[in-house]
Length: 490
Image (cartoon, rainbow, N blue to C red; front, side, top):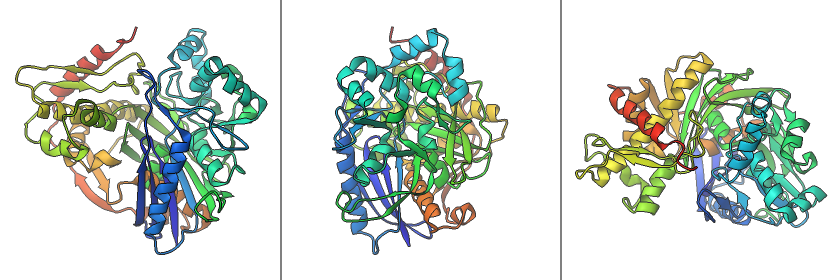
């Protein structure tokens, strides 16, 4: 038996067919366009996400010897998607998690004193990152579309809910608790949408999807809509929670970091929602069929892999992301250059949407190799920032960090990360753990795997990086640079 996983990320869709032993049988990938209508605004065309999903699945299925038994979905989180319930067409582009247009909404609500109550109910903070702030902006600035939402014609959701609607030809409008917990509309203690929060943000509750367990059958694909296949949809999780599950971090204290467009560090806190005093997020990791919730503490870093992409596409100093390691190894250090990649503001633990990217320490001797190495150092420093406060908040010692995502293939970065944290870094053989987690959830929901112990047995080590000497001076310069990057947008 095998399972099809659809991983709808920020820049493209990956599809994997995963076998019972946890190995990847086949894969497909398709990028989709990024839209930047103004500085600080990021949008996706939902139809382009759907077409990318179809193409990625065609490729993966073409390479598989048998038809998978189930489908799992994982997705970029917080992105606000709208679609017509009848035609499934989207009346406007989706507002992406990176988008900062709702900063004014957040400031107004904070000034009115709402943030403590929002944090109490959701485990989150008032920041443009989260879905409800984007929906509140839409209600003010796209009134024609919002009238359609209020009339019931247009549905709301995150990318998982949109894809499931497309897969089922509109018959199913659902999400899971891991995605719902990222919207600022979900009470993470009660495990349901909050009428109080929906009222605060002006979001009609009946426009939202039904919250279902993260594993277990919630619907079936429509053969006309989805490549002639009728398959149970049996796993749903936001991308970072799916990666936590795919990394076999099933027990409290287990920690992983995914290096993607951004980087996300999560620690499993079990059935207890741990509240952070240092700007981290309390989130739902996954929900069981019995209604139980497993929680995580999360540090969200908005720009890491996207900084490498900027070096490639924005500056043209590299031709491909894979070049960063050999280029960075040509110099022993960054030559005093510090890059704060706050290209869309700062996430945890600083949380400053007005911060902007900053490069300091440039001299006549600075080369592209120094800038590339400073970019890799920045990623390691950002993760250290998060892990330091995370382990303090959770009152847990970190002994091992499991890493995944595209940038985890960079051995130099993994070495830097181990040095900065002072702990062992482990990279699995299957680095696409986000999609793997979706597959595991779907397989758990349909009996392909009997439980988490069987899933954990499929995890295989690719490389282990032991910590060496830590350069605290470079880290101190990093923290100085972060402070200078704050408050740039007035």
